[in-house]
Length: 382
Picture 1 (spheres, helix red, strand yellow):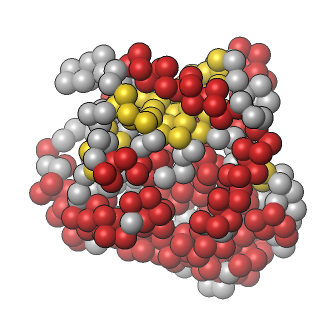
Picture 2 (cartoon, rainbow, N blue to C red):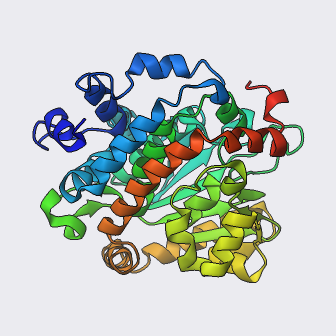
């Protein structure tokens, strides 16, 4: 099918914003069977990943063609950066109470600081379709609440027997859910990057789409508080943060290649922090960066030793970031992006990512990796 013509039709000539999931399923109704329907994908989710028919590959190819086109791709990026309907519905109550429990995520306002707490306790704060959707809503609420000037991302104290009482930042993608076919290409792999993670980096669009990188945006600086570990997707979050405070004993790694997938936008962003060779070691050879190491120091701005020091460091960073007002802070954020990752560069990367990640998800090596390295066959999903 003609992906660009389908996009024009679904978006009413680019006059209507559309999220990726809505796009692929609306296009499927017009595709004559070239794209899978929602019912077909729902049926696929009842199968183990190794038993699926590979229907999502067509979705990845379709999204890749849309993103590769400057006009449609830019429109799709902008659409995905708008506040979610769930966040807009929750906003009045959040503004009134200063708190919202979103299940695997919680968001609270304390003075000018909005803290998103990761509390996906059953899975050591690993990521799945549900937690990713909740995180995007939490990020939206921080961005939308005018009383908040700074966002903080931090893990909740764990309840798992092995880590009880310890805070955990994030364990990456839920590999057991991946093995059992419960991780979606569109709603997780693609919408995660174009939604929540992109909003951490660029915020919400406010101006005209034709303005491109000059578009006005609603954005705020973000602080990450890393305790225990930042694995996979959690490590990727650090690459869009304005300040990273880490426990001295923590570590960061990107085991996606070992698992058989692409580590989000880490290929695009990690070299800016640690250089090309360490990036290849991290992605190709599963090299972990200890927080208190030369490479770790390129990812973490400050090291602390305990929970109390972490809270103090967050408060100091928030105070410093707002001490001279947020107008110049946001201006400098935007200009750093202009030099490091223009919107066109991100769009081009994501076009390739949509295609390559779809292929990786259906590679026989992915299942072999999960069974050998994760023992996924013998792990329970709940």
